[in-house]
Amino acid sequence: MTAMTHAFFRPPESSRYALRNLRAPRCLLPAAFDDNDNDDKAGGLAAVDLLVDEGRIAAIEPAGRLPAELGPDLDASMLLPGMVDCHTHLDKGHIWPRQANPTGDGAGASMATQRDRQAHWNAEDVRRRMEFGLATAYAKGVVAIRTHLDSLAPQAAISFPVWREVRERWAGRIALQVSSIAPLDIFLTDEGRELADIVAESGGRLGCVTRSARHPGDPMPPDMDAALARVFTLAAERGLDLDLHVDESTDPRARALIRVARTAIQQDFAGRILCGHCTALALQTDEFIEETLAACKDAGIDIVSLPTVNMYLQDRSPEARTPRWRGVTVLHEMKARGLRVAVAGDNCRDPFYAYGDHDMLDTFTQAVKILHLDHPLSDWIRAATETPAAIMGIAAGVLKAGAAADLLVLKARNYSEMLARTQFDRTVLRAGRAIDTALPDYRLLDDLTAG
Ligand SMILES: [Zn+2]
Image 1: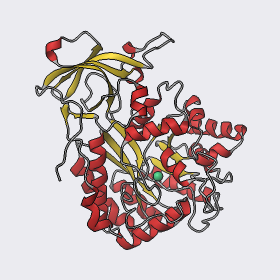
Image 2 (image 1 turned 135 degrees about the vertical axis):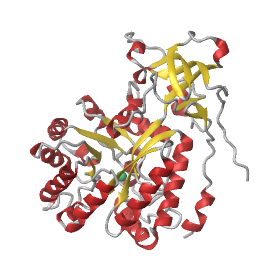
Image 3 (image 1 turned 135 degrees about the horizontal axis):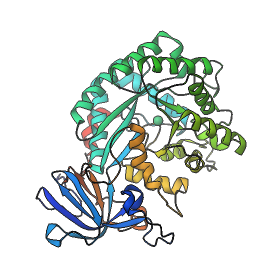
């Protein structure tokens, strides 16, 4: 079988070259490209020429400024920065062929994953599936990923050392960050303290779900406040940021987000806090939503929505009943309130999501449709580029002179073409050079995942 790349063009071979007549989102360009004209017929895109030198962006100029001999005219092709996926589960990825989710809902996902973890997740299994996910993401033009790692003992002691090796192997290609994920109540035990130490040794974020293993059916377990206080204390003692799975539920009783915010304020927590999912918030009254968002703003909480996974898992019923809601949080209201909001890929071919391909451009495209990020699209592309980079505290996701020339060039000339057609033929530039965008073959995992 021959691997072939479908990238629609290759840049010049020289270390200094231009790509001329591109279209780039104004919101990701320097302020000089801001357009005060409200009737923006170009749909939020600016016509630019790009100069690359020694692997970095040397200049971005209005189109027409750079001489033709420096490089090709790309006929209005879109230019994007490398994309950033700030919430994934690389350790779960691609187990679907050996461990499906029989019910397709969240409870089925948790049970199936636990079964698979206990039976299969040795270091080799976790490493090879993570490598497969990273190779796929890299070929798609993803430059940074934060992954959660299932952390119930004994898994943390297996997965975190693997992750540290993988981080070194991928340094310079994908910036990798890590967060733990475990039931909230383990932080009331020694296991929680030991986990916080493993996370600290790994330079990670302390993370958990806002559910308690001792009260599995209760979205607001009685030990929640005590356990949350302990999570914040363990993080503060070690100087760790937090990354929490919050209220991932269709149950309107799930109101943990405001408790997280109030705990942060009470403890005057100095670290960053990223809260993922928060879907049950969309089921609250307008007054309670406003109260919660005000508390999140005070606490400096960032939000990530995982729209493909939420829509897959939520409002699913065994009786062939059609789902009635989309399962996503109030992302527009959060952004309007001044919170930093991102979208991310979450799970990939595992019991929490049977599909996915580690492709943040596809995640953004689906987010536009699921969350109505369109009409106008405004600056929502930041939610898949600049904002998750800022949340992760890394330099990525913007188009400016001096930045690494880690870029996507699309055949699409505008958002309409980009959002309508799968961008399988994108050119991915890393440090100014086109990389092979052929994807790893699923057959590479057959010996691990045959059921
Ligand atoms: Zn997640």
